[in-house]
Amino acid sequence: MPRILATVEHAVRLLELFDADHTEWTLSDLARHVAQPTSTVHEQLTTLCETGLLTRVSRGRYRLGWRLLKLSSALYGSLPWYPPAHAAMERLARRTHLLAFLCVLDGARVLCVARSVQGRDGPPVAGELDFELPAHATASGKLLLALAGRPLPYPAPVFTERTVTTAAAWDAEATAIRQHLHAVTADEWANGTGGLAVPIRGEHGVVLAALGVSLPTPRLRESDMLLRALRDAADEVSWHLGYRAPIRAGNSEH
Image (cartoon, rainbow, N blue to C red; front, top):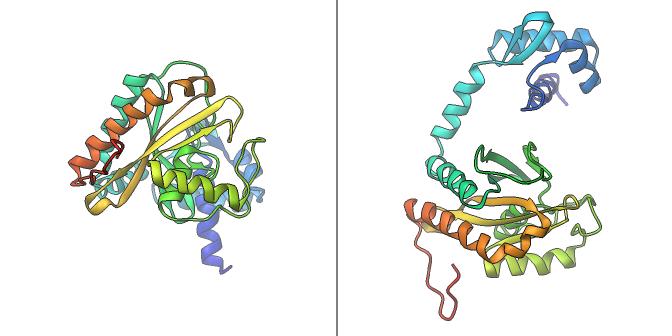
């Protein structure tokens, strides 16, 4: 890998270590996590601080810098579907009292770009803070892969005994997802956690994102009610964005 590309990759790895549970890092902790000499990491941190992507606070600790807020604002401003989808996600969370989220397909990766901050109760579920989700073991991932006509990721890591890991099983499930336009998981990423997801579409039916909820597996007995809530929320956003779902004879689902 050319040196300039390796340098960028290392900087991205440092930035990705900052999340809701790790808002500050010391130089030594960062060096240990990325398995690089402290002198190398210090050089990278200095550059990131000078560009405003990180900031150095007291006691030799580092936090994310304000420039990231500007970049994130520019990103979300370039996505006209994001504000109405985010508002619908929050309403869904209040209505269902579950963790709701928006996910997108980025190449082969499934990224969680927003999570609800209110309305949720109940025990913790898997993936509450993850940015990149396992595409073959989450409802949003399965939905986005199936609607994009993507194969099962290879290799497909095994998380539980219910994780889908064979092409035949995936092909059958992907066909069902495309037919019913929703995805369900139960104990596939972690035992005790399930998920439901439906698509948000833009004009001409383009799939923009997955709107989903994560929940304790026993609550999947409420899946009919939850799917109605999900579809109501997603359809409202899709309609706002100009999508008009075709009416299918003999089937009220859309």
